[in-house]
Image 1 (cartoon, rainbow, N blue to C red):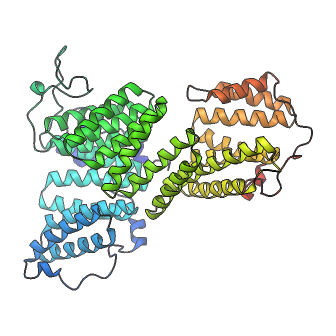
Image 2: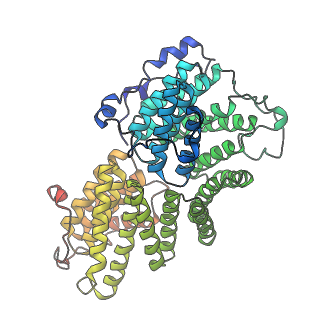
Image 3: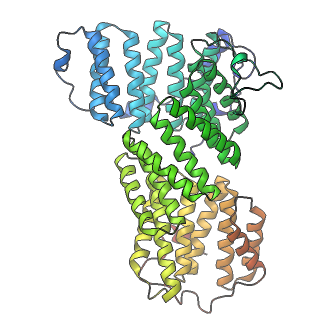
Length: 553
């Protein structure tokens, strides 16, 4: 994760979790929340044009007033975005923006800029999205549209988070929430003690008879709180995220916004699953799915089904998980959501790998990888390449166990190494230390199996250093267990014991039983040293990436 800027360390402004804000408190934080990405956007140039602008309006719009043509182009662009035709949508947005500028329609310009910013996020260019939202924000402010200003702040906050400016994102979300509070929204009434309602089993929902009257900005306020809750999850401020989700949920309920309620329930379910609160996560996913179905939101349904499939996989209900994945894939395909399809295919590939359905698992990974590449989604590519490499490594290990390393088919090994190298390069670009460490440990396993204990140790130590920075205790414990085994195989008993003790000391509930047992086996002296290091090494494939050679002991 990129380092936080100084703004992340600033205390939250009053009016967010404390006293009601004033205009003075709102203005006092505006300056420190100003974007700091100007030099980056300037270096990119205009970037707004995605092709030659058409010389005139589409034939169906000839003879129409400029503003009406602008609205029609904007609507058509929104439809094209849903169809994944981003290039044509971009040209329509550009032309609509030009028409609104000619007509002097500030709000029309701001709305198109908001839409184009969302498109740029889909295209993976958050820097340009921030610039669109900056311009929209200024237009809303000039027109005195406070609600539009709040929405632009929320959207810019999301774009800044995607850009890696987490401090700026926090500022934007705080400002948006303060602004909506100024517009008249107040915290929802708390439920009376002992009250029950048909929705009282869902945490955070207020019974209808106790809700405040729906307010015009309640849903927008809820969206800002939900966005800040998402960011707080990313920053590991889980208590703060839970408060934001609960407040947003009540605001959406008060506004009668079932789609908003469902989005918060899905996000809270994800947070709870990350906390191993499986029961709470399952309840949130089920209720979110019910709301998405009631609103006929197919994308929402697909997202909730995929999340529930992940939960069922964790619970060991593989048949139920596969049903959820199949339904989610069908919905994502119907709505032409390529990223959604890719995420489900990757998850189903993982599931089939667990079921040892290796042929279908590789097929799912291949399809997921093609979709991630078509959308330039590097994190998805890296994760899928790592998973496919693991599967191919498992095939090689299985054969090597039966017939020996020298007799095993090198093609599986070469394919696994190719996948790992590509995944490692992507994780490095993404500055994902945990991702890099996972690949390095897998490469270390392969080197150990080949008999190259020096290469294995070098890779494991590189993974260890990355995990010490990321703070992932379970993965660090597993890596230390592998270091202990490698030392033991090389006959270095003292080093093996020290690493095994560290592994058990760092273990937490997420550490696999297999790695705990491995560390205990090293301490008990049950791992025998090999007679000659490298005696069984398969020389057909290099043992380690060149950039890690210097780290060998």
